Image (cartoon, rainbow, N blue to C red; front, side, top):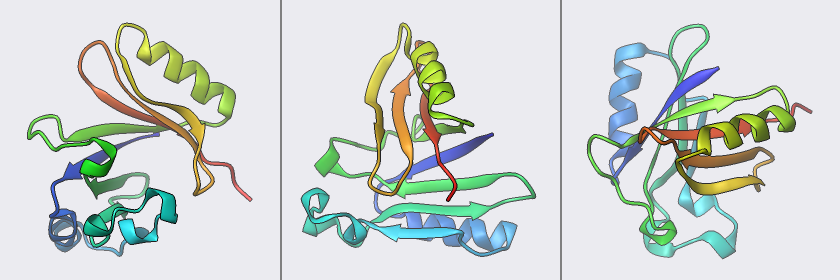
Length: 138
């Protein structure tokens, strides 16, 4: 499944409240930077949105966040979106990540995340940002 992941510079909540008014529904996930483990937290960014997701239609999610200068990210209008692809296994995630990254740039290698997912981020050789993940079910 491929979903859009949007990046904002401090106004993610305003944007997602607007999208919710358009598409309806409720946020599936809403996390702030203050929810990060202490070693990742930058106090001045604690109020920013770490991750928000809004179901839009039966099989799609609109997801997003505020960028963090602490992690070296900056919003550039025009490339402030990422395609998020969720796989069925860690092996599929690794295969797709490796294939998409050939000729491109690995932004964050595949790794186990503190929230339980296995994910990584890259920019392919055409300049498209991708987030590849596998989220095991309990």
